[in-house]
Image (cartoon, rainbow, N blue to C red):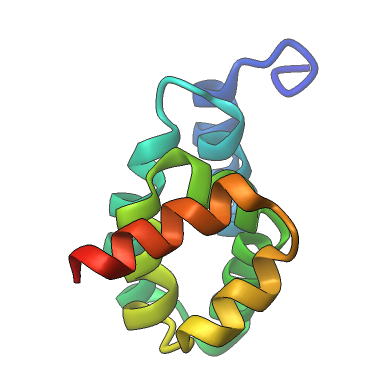
Length: 112
């Protein structure tokens, strides 16, 4: 019911109780006001996860790749290229033809 009503913070609490970390990521992605907090959440969560949960979280991140980049290109670049050790070519390949997102990533890369 909380999901249908878009009560993302309530969903987050429920998912946290059942250790559904990948679904908590969706709460951050769907909550426009808290979307940029996803980077801090991942950074704090990652060391505590086992391999199975890491895979689920990383898959969820890849499912929402574009939304995460649009939330904050600089933090997304660091997440993908530094934290997940993806090279810039792979990141650009995943972006595909989305010119807005390409520009944001390349702009960040220029700053680096």
